[in-house]
Image 1 (cartoon, rainbow, N blue to C red):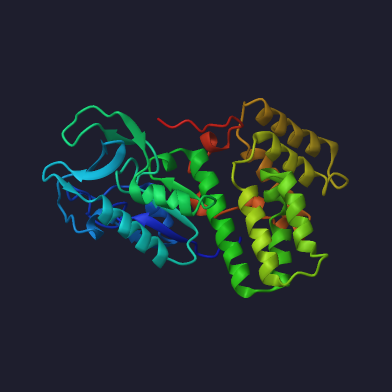
Image 2 (image 1 turned 180 degrees about the horizontal axis):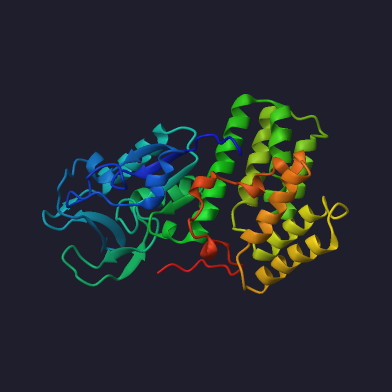
Length: 328
């Protein structure tokens, strides 16, 4: 059982924290509710912070002479500059943040698919964009795990988000400790996870960790961080996951019976064909890790990239080989 650092995550305050929606509602988010036990959240409501109050009449993004403006139609009040100022001030004030979970399609917090209207009173949207805070977050933190609560209902998207979140949080602790030993340990423990995500970046990260040029820790950690972000920028392909499992099998191949190996390879083949989830193959490897007391594999984050309690109760959808990234 891994010990996990507590990631620092900015979250829209209306998600499980406060009744601060325009109509006084609080939004239910099972992901946010579950994460409260494992994450240090920093809740924020940009619209309340600029003085719009609760309840309030909604704001919308309108196209005015070719520019986007944030307007409250009921009063005609333009709060664009107030919102821009708040977003800059707020993001300047936070430190060591590991990720963001923001409100889906909100004109202030939305990451995408926020409607743009032709006029203050217009009824038909003429386009879509990011909300003001959401857009500022994406611009300032392009490599961090950033999602809205809508997309996090998709199990595959949630898995990728959590793997990045807890990996980056653990690396932040390495930077704080400032030890070459801790950096090497981090790299060693994450080798299989990095192999699944990007073998090219794994090789680069290995070269950085070797530090043949004798760079000071701060410079080395900065180089490592940049390539770690690159490595985890896209979710791993199912074929890469299979490659990691076959690599792990190599640690036991001379200790297993032919029937044991055949059963494992059968599970892998069924997963490759999309007939079963990856769980049986992974659990078989984990059982062998315990059985043969393999210390190296025991510490590999690939087998537990985030707290087990955050796994799907029914993981079939999230572990099927297809890249199920569609969200309705």
